[in-house]
Length: 506
Image (cartoon, rainbow, N blue to C red):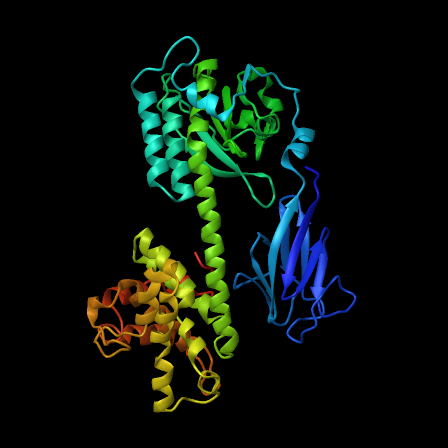
């Protein structure tokens, strides 16, 4: 798909607008010139692909980071509000502007395949059609119950992934499909991105599909989006001509297809794609109208979930910026925040912690040292070991950090990490001398991760320990410094940290 795109980057009071690939570095002839000694002469490249803008490091001395994560050899996609750091210079992705979707998709959408039926209705008309489909009303059983469940999902589920999965599971069951898929528009590339897939094998024919590699027809999906029509397609003789993201529809054993438009009165969101196998009865026009009505019914909830995801991403970017502010002051702990977060997330997953706890650790660990902002540079950046008096001042970063975080209502739940990650299992930690299980569990996880990275990292006054020695030290801290159960889990993670310090945050 041919289209143009403009990437807007900013740094302090300067803005760059890129419409084609460009190198970033300290060479004055480069389009994106950064006059700073931490930036290499040809530091990185930003380039446009079919799927959007990406950045790739060019073997720079001080590295390229996206939202605090260091790039290795691969390129990484860029999103609005991303923080892209070259050496010590951090740029913000202000916006990515694309050509309107409808114009580009109308060029690519084709009518060279047979369609059984199309259905186009306004959002409110689609909702009204739930009561009457064709010349009959739906049974008051499973179909109406599916609508009630959909309403429950919209009211009680905030996470987009869980919401889409539940909606799709019910829709596949109600319409007796062998499989369903939901693809939503990417806000940055205007391409459809697969978000959920569900298979349902309890068809009346009891025929199980033999190959389910292709989740939806890209060709039909593009036509659905471009023309704003929901589509019923059931011509098996023509299946080989309809391509999907990874091959033809024939590879997915689709005998009949419904592709309906997810939309609100404000905009198009994406598509809901359902298919039946060749041995199942074909979808009917009433099935098309019911699927279209269901799509209209759930689209507002999907739009809200998309907005919440966007809000979460902005929030996490803010957290990342705050964490980077600490590391820029403490010259001896570069990358510490990312490594501790990665180790903590690995440990929390291995310990089978709840989704709620995982989310708190993911958000709170980057800010565990935020209180160091309030520590004097003479102590924070001291190249030698701290005196007892200086150590007492340094310990105040836990309470200073908790005071900072308390000012942000959305961060209140991660205060235990910030305040209590230096508490000890035996009660000899700080600042509150908490003991055993009185220490919040999320703080106990971060305590192990923080200690691990501190031990293996070099300091001006000492050499970091080897991984083996650090694991031994964590084991020795069982029942004294650390939660014994978490220590056992952590010791079992030895192989997961073989690539230290390159640890992906999961």
